[in-house]
Length: 406
Ligand code: ADP
Ligand code: MG
Image 1 (tube, protein in one colour):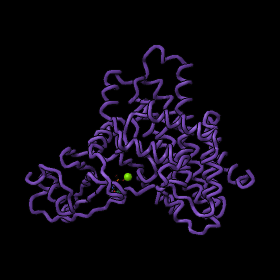
Image 2 (cartoon, protein in one colour; image 1 turned 60 degrees about the vertical axis):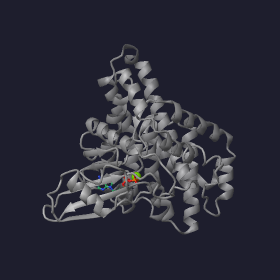
Image 3 (cartoon, helix red, strand yellow; image 1 turned 30 degrees about the vertical axis):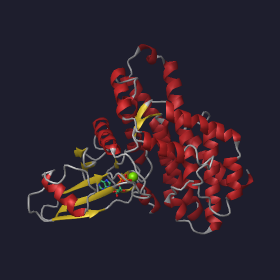
Image 4 (cartoon, protein in one colour; image 1 turned 90 degrees about the vertical axis):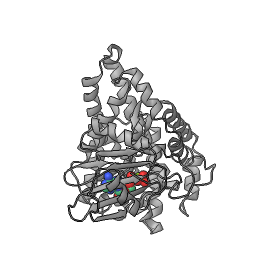
């Protein structure tokens, strides 16, 4: 395995050689096709395929410098991602790509090629309907989150995992970009669409109740080491086809509040729902399917967490029905709150989603953004009062119709 004993940033040729010489996945001299297919702004992703056998592999490499801005970022995130994928794979078999190899020196993960599955954000934009989404994603959430808590794991092992998954640099990105700057633009990085400045000033920077509630969510994110989270579970980390879903890219994994992952998915589904509300005729089937997905995702996640709890939690005090309700009510309230912070941060922060940027007509874009900010703020403030998927989708419908008069 010559040449891979010291870190360097690979190009496509290096990655193909790595697949043959280090992974031994291909015969020496086999004709390989290798392409960099990364579309994220952080890492490099290579797809290597043998023309003859059709076999393929994905090699993901973390660079010491962030792909987008060039600023330094700890490559230990690659080791965290690989370990998180292995744990997720053991708990939710088939829902994440299989890991073949992980290399700390090169900051490389070699994994199963899931090119048969497609980016869920793009699929929803193209009005593809997958009736299995809520079932699959809720299984991933319940199966990976609850078993990683100290309610289930040996407490010593849980503490060791909390240490291993301490991920300060990536957590700081979330603490700043998601849970601070949309309300206090102290780094001057917010990007507010021209025409919505006064609205953002009023609805975010000057709403003291909202800011206090977001403070609580930020504090919980930083201090509640409840479960091993994926940490970046937006619809671009979920891939789907008719058979099911695959979930990739847990480099933000760390021990935090379970509701953060659940809320992240819900918030991102609302971007697609909001986009359809403003760009397509009302009551189309894809919009109705999204409503069903959001509604069922909330309900099924709650139901499956409850089922997992009954099955796996043995400690006497935690077997109390009252404690269980307190615990799961808290998780689901957090989920609603973090759905709200995700909605808000993608509208005013610099990590915009395509459901917004693709809407270029200000007559649509401005009210779409205001609706999503109003929804986000409502969810943060009312997170303890929403207890079902139906109430969640009803909140969106209400804000959509009453919006400009609120
Ligand atoms: P980043 O951490 O830079 O965001 P991702 O893990 O999200 O990188 O991967 C970027 C893109 O590379 C994905 O959107 C997807 O298109 C492709 N990709 C990543 N992992 C795989 C895989 N296992 N199989 C097929 N494509 C993949
Ligand atoms: Mg990514």
